[in-house]
Length: 80
Image 1: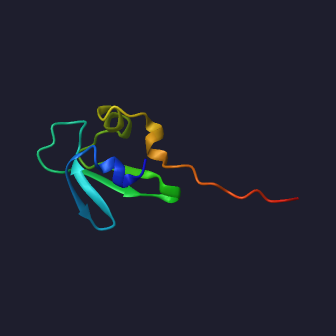
Image 2: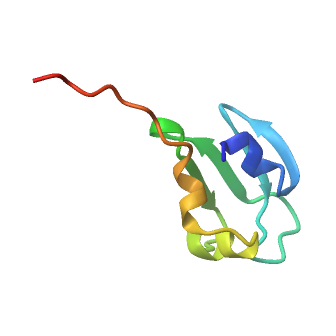
C-alpha cells in the first residue's frame, strides 16, 4: 500500500507540505491531528499529535503494521 492509498481510509484528509493530515481513527478527533508522509523506500510514516500510538492507529483501521512498510523494492543481485 502506498501512503496515498493509506489516506483513502481516513477522514478529513488534506495535503500538508509534502504529506497529508487527517482525523486520527484511534481517538475521537474533532480536527485533523494525524500526520502522514512517505519515508525511505515508500514506508508510510504516521504521527498522531494527540499522542495515539502507531499500532493503535493502524489497528483502528483494521490493518496490520506491515501495511506501513510499503511495497517491496526489487534490488539487483551483485554478481561475484
